Amino acid sequence: IVLELNEIKMQQSVEAAERKASHYNDNEVYINTFGGLEIITNKGTLTDDDIKSDQCYNFLCFMLLNHKRRFPIDRLYDVVRPTDMNMDASPYTVVKNVVYRVRKTLSIISLEDLIVSKSGTFIINPDININTDFDRMEDACQRLSETADAEMMRSYYNAISEIFRGSILPRISGQMWLIPISTYFQSLYLRVLKGYILHK
Image 1 (tube, rainbow, N blue to C red):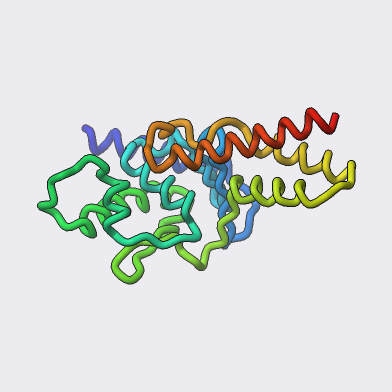
Image 2: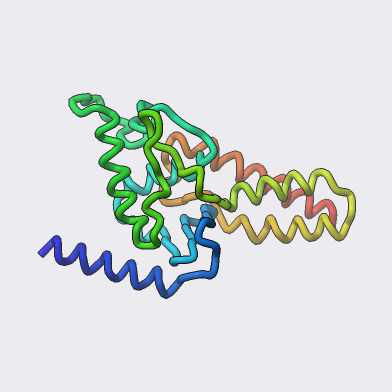
């Protein structure tokens, strides 16, 4: 019964993702993290609600927020099992099992190759073009700091306010690795907001 229910839920997630299908290129993935996770491809959209496992969600978010970096397998193991002192299973095997479950969920939008194995660890597939809201926000803030043109400043203020839809990944806001990242972006947004008020 449990297996059948899981299959029904998976099918419902597939159908929901297809309904939200977008017109992006095959190699493009858009990631939104402010206010909650959204993964958008030309095959559809995955949201917080589609990823039931907290362990898988935490791991996937860590990988996405660090999509330009590579970590040793021990660091990924710490993300997957932050309080586990039992080292009976090898860290690689534990992480590999989580990656398998994450890939199964990502397959709903044909993105099972988002996380790949490389040199004894796992990374975000470098062949996939990742576009994230936090990268766009940093870029807009940088451009804002470099311009004195009132029209351009207004344009960047508007763009930043549209991108920042709330705290980053609120579902896992208590994760130790996320706290400094969350604090950084909240401070960045508040600085922009203060600058906008002064500008007005």
